[in-house]
Image (tube, rainbow, N blue to C red; front, side):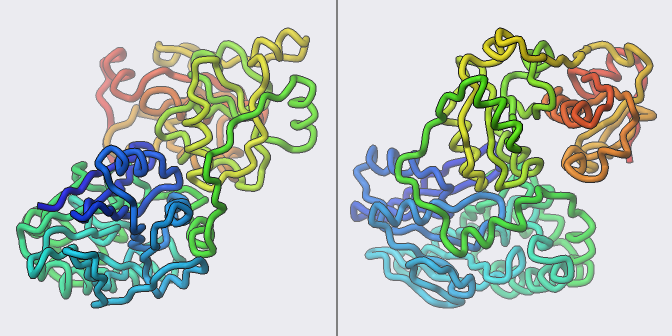
Length: 449
């Protein structure tokens, strides 16, 4: 019996795994940059992390393989990825002797060109498939992250890999994917984190496609937008991200130095809850509440080379903030405003506010729904303008009404949109809640499509 311990990053929607190899050693599959949980878990189980395994060059997070290598782990990765740091490159059909277990690579190009799945074999018996993004519960990972002209060819490669390799594996074989529900790398999925070959054969709508063309049409037709940083992290992971060892801590920055930093081009990111931001914040600061999804929106909306200054409440987790920022490749963490918003206000510098409301349409403002278009189509308020939050980092900000009420599902993304609108001299208020809350209060049915 092989022990496989999952680790789920709820914010990025991804899973990684610690595999007990049965001889005091362990293998980690697709580690995130912060390796603390793997090392702690290995210690608790009396294991040493001997291998770090990569299924592909990740676009949505910075890999932790170099951090594990610093502690003595050997890195195993697709040879076709042309990784520039020390590793053992693998190709389709190659095997790695792990002692009592064997790791067998199977070519599964599609999500990325170099993608490999790995079958873990005990003797002659397959015991697990680490599928990366080739197969996930209820779907597959997207094929449009390399280049627009590669989306369809990669989708066709994935169809052939699934039907020619993956679906030939036993129906009862457990499947451990990297991407899953909540990941922008994934197509819509069933929500479970693990599955089996047989379950996917019976229930996965993409696998039910009658032909390659139908598979491609279903897959490509279901792709939505994704964060801008996805197009740069692959290369960071290929070249090898900076190794930190111990993660840095946020330094305290005086009010005067924050003001100078803003003049020099720093981005002020206010990570406090939206109620605190609404009551008082630095003018032109960007609201991204610290929560599991923080990293995705930071990476989507802020350029990676921009110096970052943060505003926090005293009780917020600085370590989590640093972990999430580094995890998507934001390295220029200048520090946090010493004394918080109170110190800024006490210095006599101007404070801005944003109106929050739980009442539908309090001033007759145009309603802007900033959720993903896939969310909007599942149910939206009649007359609401659909503008995805990620688009507001670009030219879409000019398409907004001069005054607007912003809505998402709860309020956090709407506040981010409002902060972007306000810095562009638009009037903005935020509805705390989502379309269902609006409908419940007004009695008006939501529209679909």
